[in-house]
Amino acid sequence: MSVEVERKFVCNADTLKTLEEIGAVCLGQRQFCDQYFDTPKFDLTLKDMWLRKRNGCWELKCPTTADKAEETSGEQSKAAAMCSRYKEITNLPEIQLRVKEVIKDVCEDSETETSPSQEEESWMSRNNLVCFAEFTTVRRSFTLEEEGVQVDLDEADFGFHVGEIEVLLPEGGDVQSALKKIERTAGKLGLTGDKRVEGKMHAYLRRNHPEHFARLLSEHIL
Ligand code: V4E
Image 1 (cartoon, helix red, strand yellow):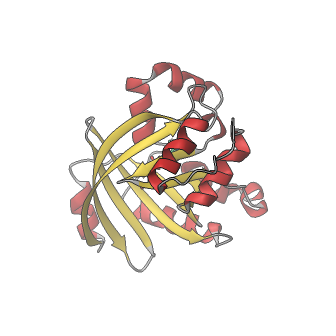
Image 2 (cartoon, helix red, strand yellow):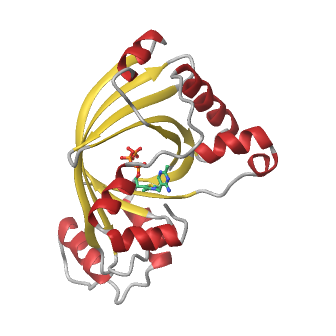
Image 3 (tube, rainbow, N blue to C red):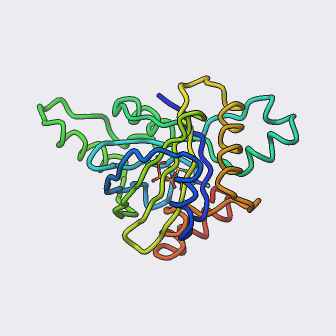
């Protein structure tokens, strides 16, 4: 399991040039298709849990708990407020355990022999998990090696662009130092805003699922 600390930013025509000027190294471009799942009552997303299949592989992003230092230090809490922090789980049995803590299975697995894909289908239908968002992203990635950060420039197929500065940590890793790296990188990129920038999912739900979007806003998830 890893923890992703990330700050989103609005990218513009100058972002590529700025990345080059500050010495960012291009890691390449890739394309991925995300399918996000939840129950019709939004049981997972209302708990800030984001279950997705990315290019067919399961991933779950769920909240971490804030550490003490972050709660007490003024400057750091400002940096933290600009960033999001999520555990990323890619192991399916562990994902299923986490989901089970939120959604109680209607019935257990049957004893009959089934293929892995049939088991996944059965798990999804037992838990009433349906796909609520599907989109493809083209991502160009860069690294600022001296900072150990990655900068992604995302272009989603529903006409939305966003940049992300991110640091990936092992569980229990140094979040404060990750926040500082992200802040320094934001400074180098000339980012001045002090408000969180909306991500792909935020924009997707706002445009396509206003009811789901409103519910998450009212619960302060988005
Ligand atoms: C909406 C959301 C999540 C779903 C995935 O969001 P995001 O990080 O935007 O996706 P992506 O494609 O960049 O994933 P990556 O490749 O980095 O793993 S996970 C958490 N949220 C909620 C959320 C929020 N409340 N505020 C911000 C700024 N971001 C996300």
